[in-house]
Length: 113
Image (cartoon, rainbow, N blue to C red; front, side, top):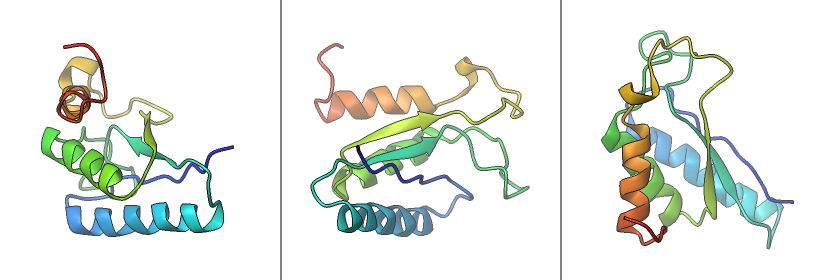
């Protein structure tokens, strides 16, 4: 069974997000040595910050998050849209998936495109 920490995004301070994500990845490896670590990322900002709640993550932030996970020893990511689509957007409105696909191509993590 893998370790599955979450690394939700509460604001636009990338360094703070990276510090917490790295800690969670390190802690997952410490608590479950030898087990894969799959980090849960939300495609929108978390609801607990009214300034950002439910807003789609920008392309550069998503790329930063994925690069941080790769550099920090995570084995993969799980993308979570949230329990509701209160942010009102459509799949076409988000920059999340283009960032994921570009990251995968740049890191040779996919075989198409």
